[in-house]
Structures are given as structure tokens and as C-alpha cells.
Image 1 (cartoon, rainbow, N blue to C red):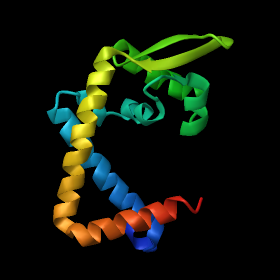
Image 2 (image 1 turned 30 degrees about the horizontal axis):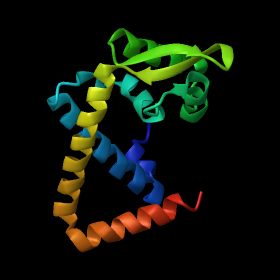
Image 3 (image 1 turned 180 degrees about the vertical axis):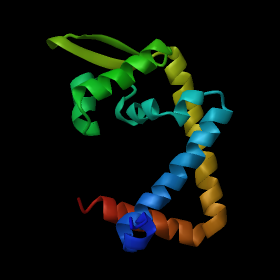
Image 4 (image 1 turned 180 degrees about the horizontal axis):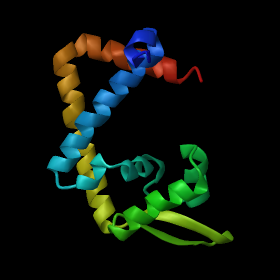
Amino acid sequence: MVKKVDDIRVDHIGWRLWDAAAAWKLRFAEEMVAAGHDWYAEARSSVVPYVSPEGTRQSDIVARMGLSKQAVQQLIIDLEQSGILRRDPDPDDGRGKIVRFTEKGLVAQRDSKKAKEKVEAEIKAKLGTDEFDRLMRILKQIGSEG
């Protein structure tokens, strides 16, 4: 008999953080889809947090994402074909590329700020201001321990 994940999953902070992050990501993606950015509900959107407003070397995105060069490149190509990202030559590396947002990508980034604020407001309403502020302090403390 094969055990279900819930039968063997030990309740610990890692799962709680994972579940909370997954719930946040789902709500955020729903808001982005509602704003007209359907691609945010797809795996290719996972590249976006690694692209800075001034552009990021494709090799740095690969290193930060922890995926294969080919997998990351395919995600970037998919976003490039949809007009979200563009790849420019890296002036410091003849074979490298700098990944940048297009105007369409920048519009999505502006909309993402609104979506994040909306989802955050929902969480704050659910927890209350004091508990939300406490949660933010705790998460910051946990994140700075790495």
C-alpha cells in the first residue's frame, strides 16, 4: 500500500512556511490574471522575481533559480515570445545576455505592486494589524538568519 503524503508528512515549520507561501502565490497569481496577465498563473512567471528593473544577467538568473540553464532559458524564451522580457547582449560577456523587461513587462510589474498590496491587505484584515506586524517581524528575523 502506498502512503499518502499527509500520512507521512510531519507537521513542522518548513511545511507551514511552504503552505503559507503557496497560498500567497496563488492569491497573487489570481490578482495578476484578473489584471490581464494570464501568464502569471504559469510556471514561466517564476523567472520574474529574478529580473531587476535595470536588467539581470541570464547566467545570474540561472544561478539564483537553481534550475538547469536549459530550463531557465526556455522560461525566458517563452516570456520573450509573449513580449514580457527581452534579451540584450551583455557588454561584458560576448556570449552572455542581459534579461530586461519590455514595456509590457513593466506594465505587469506595476500591476504586480497593486496585486501584492491587495493580497497583503487581505492577510492584514484576517490577522489584524498587531498580529500582521508581529508576523512581518518574525519573518524578517527568520529570513535574516540564513
